Image (cartoon, rainbow, N blue to C red; front, side, top):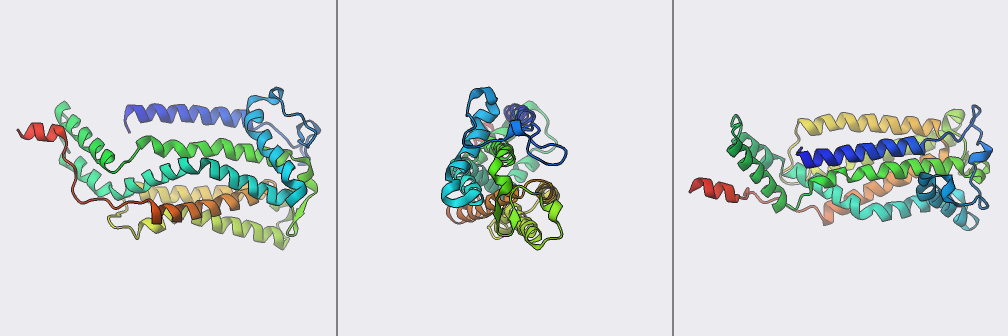
Length: 293
């Protein structure tokens, strides 16, 4: 990772921490009841006094769900809001996913370049290796900064969580046998909540594994140590999401299921329409030609 990407990662990390700190205000009391001062209804004023995070993220989502609620209900309102949010972020997510897939496909070429300069720590060799790697990325239209774009989904997830918790009408709304405001953990012996969590777990699994499943069919794919370690990270993510679905309002499970289904469809679309074949020849750089002369 070069210095530019390290700076980008630091900035995004700081933004994420700031968002978490501003977006995790307590909404429920010790009995998991919505605090009166945190409730959002159709009459709640949408003003900057509520805070920048609430004004820019939470209120737009909550107010939209409340707007469509008379026409389709709260549950379908959550689903529609999730679909719209994913459509807005779709171009960025597609760019990020395409870059990630291409990085996996060119991994053998990248390793070949690095092996070529192994043990050569002089400045000229390092410059040539860097130039060849950059040429490889450029040839395959890979943006290294695109790998950080998924960080943008974190503020949206927190905003959705806040909006769902604070919509007052949601706590008295039932959908397919479960209450949207109740946590599955508090009704873990009831089958509607069990089915909800099982569906969430299945869709979450395929949403994080679909890329690897598709990439195994791609010519030039070769798993490496980083990809194997990523598998354990994916397992941790699935377990974490399932756990959070148990202790959060059931409406959040609907959000995660919808997001997972969209992620699967997005991965299929990218694989069959955007993932390009990587040519066998590694591009030669200007520095290589000059050095040969």
